[in-house]
Image (cartoon, rainbow, N blue to C red):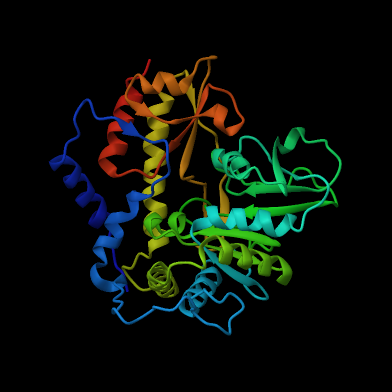
Length: 386
């Protein structure tokens, strides 16, 4: 059982930031979503999530030769199913679980599975703007003859087969998304990397044909490079597994075992969350994200040139409360036609410009997932922006 009071981690973070004061010339990099803000929680757990692997263990390519996904560790499969049942964010019954080196590799595997053996023309791949910037790069990277990037789903009007990507909550703007094109000859990939209670209310149990999740955004353990897909169709899952087999001959067992341990700890703590004085990981992370968004909105409201999206409160089935989303990224807008990325760069703040997301240059995406001292320095510089 984990029991954190509101001050346990927060005060420790502040004292650490005070001792390690950042230089006024420190270059703040909020371009990428490296989720290091959750580190104090896992440090507090000590050895509870420690995994020991002896030199003679986990040597084979195979995790379970008789399993559908032969490189998937059974313990990870069990932990994934348990966590989704506890949180209630995705159906796991009658699904094939495919593990990957992060959801990025699984995205490539899904594209391959949904387009092979191929036809006369590459299948168009679309996503409603603003879309995750790496989709375009990842889709075009291999110059595949099976598929090609076609851009914004809102403006897509070509005939024939297509694949639509739906990121929900969306990266970069945090909105809840559904399919836009809605034609019978289309196939859908749902990226639900941020559909966890710390980022958004869990309003329903999702039930899609291909759904992608990632360990990094769920718990903050980006370095383990673990993702998983929940797939309905056996043939699609088989093709994804074949892609993984050719691409990397499976996935690291060490990473899988670490992920299984940590996801298992979260599931256990969530099931016992009613204990007096306890605070499970998702409650801790939701509180932390809520506090950060409150501070950011306070900084932005004092500058009439800046604005942030507004999100409605919804009932969260996991917490049993009405809450509003607290996305992992802030989609910041400048009211005038200026390059906001360059403007913030002049203040030694690195962000990702809106044009990379199929939007305008007066938007930027800002990571909300940095360490406490970095985030506080960012707020100070943002507050002084004219």
